[in-house]
Amino acid sequence: MRPVPVVFHVGPLTIHTYGIGLAITFYFAYRYYDRRLKHNGYDTQWLQRSFLWIIGAAIVGARIVHIAANINFYIHNPGEILLIWHGGLSSYGGLLFAIPTAMYLKSRFAPELSYARAFDLIAPVLVSAWAMGRLLGPQLMINGGGRPTNAWYGLQYAGQIGYRIPVPLFQAAEDILIFLILLRLEKYFREHNSPDGALIGAAALLWNIPRFSDEYFWLAVPRLWDAVEVFSLVVVAASAIYLLILFNKSPKEKAPRTTEIQSSEI
Image (cartoon, rainbow, N blue to C red; front, side, top):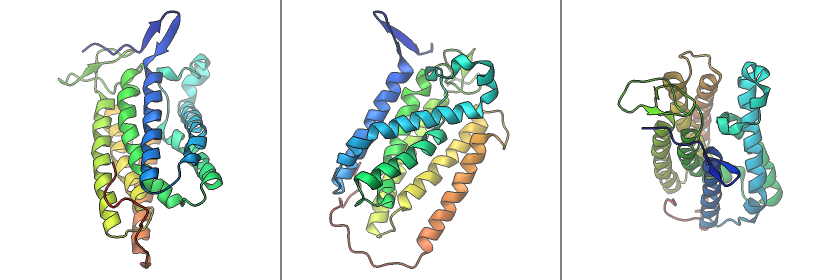
């Protein structure tokens, strides 16, 4: 299979496929989170006022962390710093900047929505958006493939020689599976009146396990001290400890959530 074109032209304009894919992904995430908030009885005006700020923070953070992790390359190639369509957005960097921004804006515009509930409601949104983002982001960018391979499933990617492991496709499949698991867990947690914050903890745990294995086996040179690998393992451990503490707290009597949907909301 030939590489997907990473750019196309409309008159004098050069359109980057990668950018279009990210824009579609961000719009999907916005609409899906808006829907989940409404179905659970929450006002969404704060999201409408905040979303562009959150996305801006995510993109800036993702780029800064990627550049910091590859500083030697960018010192010698400063012209590449702003060329995000060549790849180079760190998922962890995006979260590192977006989460504090979102927390601040939520506290300012929607104080009635607790942080735990906000995170639980966005957990399936993030994972499903990551699945879409893998298909419409790295799959459509320069150097989007993994290690070279001679396997039947190898694909060609712009900027890379030969056939590569189609890591973005594999990651999309992983994220879709995690998304389906989270929907089942959401229903289970609701039926058993589990504490708020459980779903986001489960999402962090489930997402970072394949994040580590993908990096170790398909992307980076195999080593256990790569930044992404180390951070993935740290988040897995922290998420497991968080869930143990959360579920081992003394149970508190809580009234049923009458304003929320009674079945898993996709």
